[in-house]
Image (cartoon, rainbow, N blue to C red):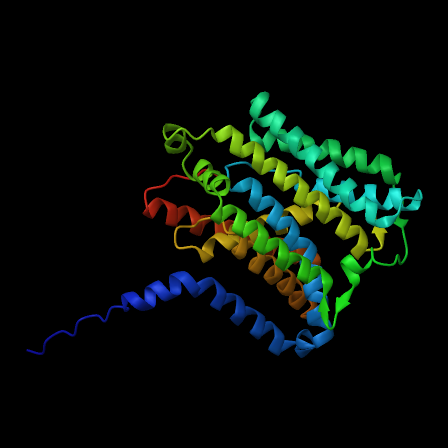
Length: 329
C-alpha cells in the first residue's frame, strides 16, 4: 500500500510575516490592480493630489487615535473639524490675520475635548451617546456660523500654503502630517503618560490595580485629540479656501475610524498605532481616488469603507481574544 502523503503545513515564519505585513501587501496589491486598470491613477499630479487629500483625513485619524488609545470614543470628531474650519473662515473674512486662526482653532478644539471629557467622566454618560450629542450641537453651531452659505476666503499668502502649498514637489500638508505622526508616536510610546494611556485603554481593571487613574488619561486623550482635530479644521479651511455649509463630518468620521482601526492590523496584538493610522489614512485617500477613476460612485465607496471598517475591527477583536484580552469597541 502506498503511504498517504502528509498535508504540507505553512511555515511558521511565513505565517508571522503575513501576520505583520499582510495588510500592507493587500493594500499595495489592491492599488496596483486599480492603477493598472486606470493608469491615470499613477499620474504624478494625481499622486500629489492624493497626498494633499489624504492629509486632512490622516490628521483627523491621528486625532481620533489619541482618544481611542486610553479607551475613549468621539462621534463628534468630524463635526469638531468642520466647526473649526468654519470658525477660521469666518474670522478671516471678518478681518483677522489668517495665521492667527491657527491658535484659535486649536483652542476651540481643546474646549470641545474638555466638554466631551466632562460628559463622559463627570456626568458618566457613555462615550458613544455623549459624543453623539456633542456632534449634533456642533453641527448646529456650524450652521449658525456659515448661515447655510459657502465662505470663500480666496488665496491668502502663507495661510493657504498650509493646505495647498508645496516644497519642491512635496505637498506641505504631507510634511505636516509626517511631523505630527513622529511627535505623537514618540509621546505615546516613549513617555510615561503615553504608556499609561495605552494601559488605561487596553485593560482598565489591571491599570486601576496598578494605581493608574484611568479617568485622568482619558481626559488627556480627549484634550490632545481635540487640539489635533481643531488644528485639522484650520488646515482644511486652507485646503478648500474657506468652508462649505455641507455637513460632511460623518463622512470624514467614518473614513478616519477606518484608518484608525485598520491601522491596528499592522500590530500583531491589534494595538492602536499612530504609524498604522497614518499609513491607512493615506491608503484610504488613494483607494477612494483609484475607485473614482475606475468609475465607482461616492455612495459605493462609502459602502466599501464600511465593509473595511467591520473587517478591521473583527480582525482586531480576534487577535485580542487569542492573547486573552477582551476589547469592546
